[in-house]
Structure formats: C-alpha cells, structure tokens
Image 1: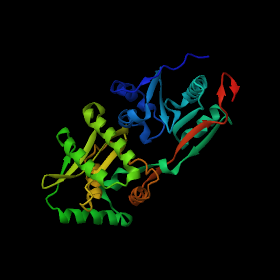
Image 2: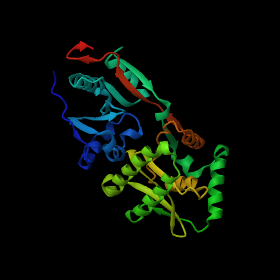
Image 3: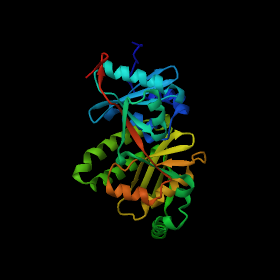
Image 4: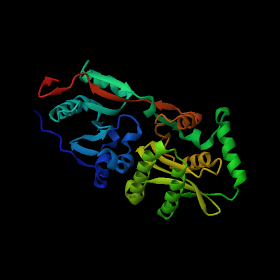
Length: 308
C-alpha cells in the first residue's frame, strides 16, 4: 500500500497551492475556480492534499465522499490509483467529479473497463466567447440588445463601477431583496449562496476577485463578480439585479465583460441547476460550449482488496 494522501480543510492559505497547479488544469469547469472551492467549503467540507505535482480535493456531495483532481495528463493513472486506494481504505465508493469529456479516454486507458461514467445536464457549464457577450452583435442576440437599450433609455444617468469593498453592504442589501422574491423551496439554496458571497467579500483581495456594479441615482441596481479559472477563462460566480429594473441583468452582464482584462477570451457562466428560467436565460445568450462534466465511479466497490 502506498503512503496515503494527507488531507486538510481548505483555507485561504491554500490559494498558492491551487495557483501552482492551475497550469495542469484539464478543462475549464467552474468547480476548479479556487474562489468557488474556498467560499463553498462550509457546505461541502472540502479538503485538499498535495503530493509533488499532484493536487486533489476531497469533499462531500449529497452525502457521498467525492474527489476532484488537478494533474498533468501523464499522471492520471497514478492519481486514479491513489484515489481508488484511498476510497477503499475509508470504505466508501470511489467517486471522481467534475471530469471533462476529453479526459474520459485517458481515464479509460489507465484502467480499462474499471469505471462507469455519467453526466447530469443540470450541471453543465455554459461557456461564451468574450466578444459575443461584450458586443451582443448578431440577429440571435437582438433581444439582449433590446433589453440593454431599454435600460439605457429608461435610466440614462446610470453608472458602471468596478466592484470594490465600499459597495459590499449595498450588494448584500440587494441580495436580501432578491431573496424576498424567491419561492420557499429555493430559500435554502439562496441562503447558502449568501453565506458563500459573504465569505468572498471578507477575503476579496486575497481571492483576486473581480466584479462590477451598476447604480441609478446612487442606488445599486445590479452587481456581479467572479475569478479566473485559467489565464484565458473567467468564471462569473454571482450575478444579481434589482427585480424592478428591467434590463439590469443584460446591462451588468455586458458591461462587466467589457471591463474584464482582455486576456480572458472565454467566460464561464456556470450551471443552470435544472432551473427552467435560468436555463432559458443562459441559452438565450448563445453559448459557445455547453460543457459536460462527468462523474466517474468504480463499477464495483472494493475494500481491502475484496469486492463488496
């Protein structure tokens, strides 16, 4: 048996570990944005372990222990061996999440016929070309331009601002108004999102947060923020707009992307979680890619070398 991985709870000090391994990212999914990993640690009990040039996250999803990995393509077989052994020693089924489609053949080659693969449409990421979101050109995006134009006409004195700590209290106030509009069954999810948001705001500079805000006559009516996944892919983690300002969502989306550093060629706007309205909205922006993310499971559960 190889030496087991040594996991510890993810903290802000692990940012440098993540950044060191980010160049080995296989894909561009939002789950491997450190801002997300850190700010949702309270919910998923996320832990991290490093071994030489391998980085592994372990967390709890819907009551199941699961892993995510950051490694070079040539090390996939080695990481799988470590994680399968670790899962067996802890007597839980092996589950690797957030795996992109291009990685599946490498996993299969490392352990032929050992794994099962499945994806859930609700957890696909929506990836857009920066230029498309920034310009909203073309016939298919005409409705979005109309929303922006209507907002600009209705509120000609609006102002766009970079998101800075002096606006955080106003953002949380707007979020509270947003929560008031949510159905009861969505409240646990939006409350958790608020806790994640507060953790981001408390550690904004250290997390390298970038965001934007729109005000009308000094009142905050929309804000958004995120962080990079890779040096060319930016992840939009949160976007909120006042429910009574028509077109505010379309405007903050466009203005924020316009003000992002030009190195970000692709924008990940994350999943729709199976919510019909959210799916319709994300599709209406004409994504370049709907990114499938797979769960990889062992066909059998092993413990101490025996099939259970």
